[in-house]
Image (tube, rainbow, N blue to C red; front, side, top):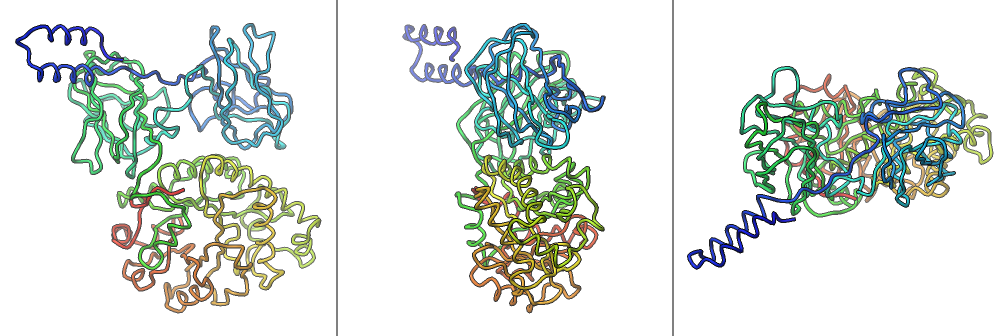
Amino acid sequence: MVNKSGLAYAFALIAKKSVTIMLIVALLFTVLTLHPSKASAATNLAYGKSVTVSSAESSSYGGQYAVDGNGNTRWASTYADNQYIIVDLGSNQTVASVRLAWEAAYASQYQIQVSTNNSTWTTVYSNYSGVGGSNTITFTPTTARYVKMYAIQRATQYGVSLYEFEIYGNESTGGGGGNVNLAYNRPVTASSTEAGGNVAANAVDANGNTRWSSTYANNQHLIVDLGANYSISSVRIAWEAAYASQYQIQVSSNNSTWTTVYSNYNGDGGTDTINFTPVTARYVKMYGIQRATQYGFSIYEFEVYAGSSSGGGGSMGVLEYLQSISGSQTVIGIHNREPNSQPSLQTDTVYGITGRYPALWSGDFLFSQSDVNNRWNMIYEAKRQWDNGAIVNIMLHVTNPKQGEVGSWEGGVVSSLTDAEWNSLITNGGTLNTAWKQRLDTYATYLQYLEDNGVKVLFRPFHEMNQGIFWWAGRPGSNGTAALYRLTHDYLVNTKGLSNLIWVWNMQDLDLNWSAYNPGNNYWDIFSVDIYNPDGFTTAKYNTALSVAGNKPIAVGECAVLPTASQLLAQPRWVFVMSWAELTFSNNTNAQIQALYGASNVITRDELPDLY
């Protein structure tokens, strides 16, 4: 909406013969660009509101943690069915949508109910086939003060658990031009910081209780590095009381040359959702020109939204892209080892060393109690990495099917099955076959969430199939490890209907007898080998990989010692190289890592195209 008084003034000038057409045009431009309207932001009505629950597992998992805007805290009920959480909005509101962010202990059957008096309830939504993940539920707008999630049936042996329970009115629950906040936990710099610890990172942590604040001066800025070029079209600023009366949003692809995409010279604080013509940028700046108070500038949250990443150019499928670079360039990646509570630990470490993000992010389902509890955290990170432009790789280092999901490395992952147990595993209807398929049902829930959110996954179910210390491995031949691979592929693809998986067959350089473990060329898309032997990236290994893969892509699934750019030039068919977590830093100097990540034949995240 245009400032009406400004327009009236402009048209009044038209009547004055002394005013030139150029002046009118200039004035109209000023009115339209410097006094833009403020788009309404989607408001989470539940944030910080009073909550009651049927039960809580402990004081560490109280109901208040489901409405605190913090994705790392959660409510968890006792281990029982028929549990609920009720949010009191404080007054009657028009309610049209809720978002449930489930922890791994989700509800397989649940309802959303509303009430004006906390006594008489109306069911507005029912789900009797819940699969967990993040559920955004819309329904006919209705008046309510109280909103309840009523969990009828648990999906696990535990209770039900929610990271976040969000409630929205008629406005969209998304943010601006897309539903992914590209600024979340990205590197951020500021012109200054007020004494007392209100650091710049607080503005991108998705925590409405923390903030950045500048020193008490005008002409201050906050810059977010998105990590790659994106086509961005929206910014959301949640101001603290110390807001800007005049400010601009500026963008850049190099952190040097800036373009102003929005100006506001009549700021009034609160929450500003700003939409503009899509523009490609990696860096986004809030430039505070004039303070509205005696204090500095202070922001609770600075969010950036885009429809899709623009990265290095056009859009293509992940497998198509890897095939296209085979013989010329290599994607560099890193595995993020335990803990799943910090699923980008090693990726972020690489960025700290090189100033570039790996193009491939890798995570794992894992087996410890903590890591199993944090599987959704890992999956959410996979989605965030994909949304930020990375290729996603996921593996299964899990316990054998005689055991439960939770176990240990020794005796769990590193364990064995008898021949009779193996036959039970690969034979349809066998006891271990049934147990393994129940495991796959669990894994499919996570993978389906990624498919529903458009995430393509390089899926490596069986690590180092010739490494006999693992319960699944070391059995050559058609009825060996290859049979388990085929069973897993067919169940996830044909029975569970997953279509977002790119299947990776993986071996180790213990020997070169890799063909003995081939599950069948129709069952895998990429052949990868883990290179750990001291002889490193030999020509023999490279040529054997080529002979096994034929025209399909080959990759280095894991390594401790990174190849050099020259070695990759001599072996150009490796489409990606993934270093193993902490071994990256103990086996390579910072200078070696920097040299590889900066090489022209090595692809980092900022150089990837928009992939699907």
